[in-house]
Image (tube, rainbow, N blue to C red; front, side, top):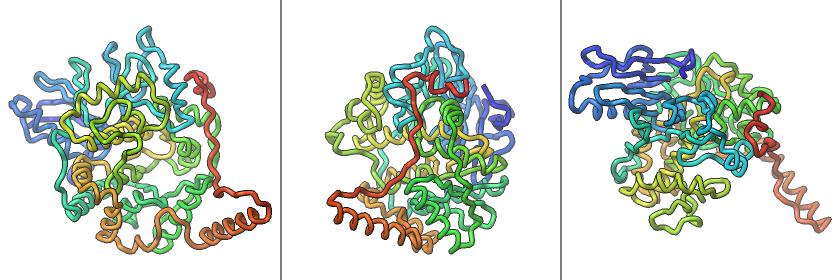
Length: 473
């Protein structure tokens, strides 16, 4: 099913023959494609699909390619699956949401699994291509779906990634991200998320030539992280004259939370983000919206070594890397997933597992969460070439976290004058006073005092999908 406002571009070969379509907002060489995608190849050439895949690898943006060429019928997601889809082989259907595919005897809800994972109330998620219903799968990043067999096959990475010089990675990523931001600015109004963290700071550095044409926004989530985000974003904005807005906080209603789960396909939870939907919606939907998703990959190696032996990972070790209980359904999916990565180094396997299940199975569906708050959401850091550079960096360099410092030092060194994720100014003094008062109270009463924290209330989550969606059903 195709939603009416989603752009649909023809894929046209050199002879004018249609080879399929690209859905979404693809970006090529600093331009957002807005008409037919004209390929410099013939659909009948023996290497046409190989060349087409190379072309799609070079696209940035948020898109899904459906290729119908002689002998080929395939679906290609973008590098992180940000235009998320599920598919039901028994019904021969592909959709952005499981709720758009009709129910049937072979397509009932995975009630026990959803209840055990407490999807929506926690960060528990459906892993390795699982979907919330039987007979249905999520198409993961780095895979292609063959529509003749309705099976997904890995297409990336084909070889080990290594030997990337950090300076070359900085240059390559800066060019890629800057190109995407340029395309968005040229297209129309753009809002960019600005927080106290590393990832949005990288985006801001790449947006330096365009800051006078971008609105920056910080959601004031009422917890310590949210307060620091607002504190640092305002400090950065004052220093550099940014157009910065902090919308008034509005707590999500039960109906808002249920609608959030419905729109994201009951696939993954984001307890902080779910409660911010009304705040996000107040920004309006006449602009594109960008976030720094993917920015963690060049600055850390994502794996919990305490839950991994260090050898070839097992299904149990893969599933244990993620929040939530270890379930038999997840183990079976992980075992099947492992068959496609036997040619890769164990650390790369672990990192791919995290990437595909935190981006494709989580970040992708999140782009559907709040259409009132943006025309569309796009992640400028997401590009196949960027992942090749990041994963090819020396592991010790990535683990050191130096990439972000080197990146900002090259593009906008003054951004390093404001700390990451640590309060400044009045908030810093307030926190110091609170800690001092807490120590005094502890000394006077003899009762140990914990850290001062506050967080959004967790969404109440039923063990049954229909009950969780009750407010909107």
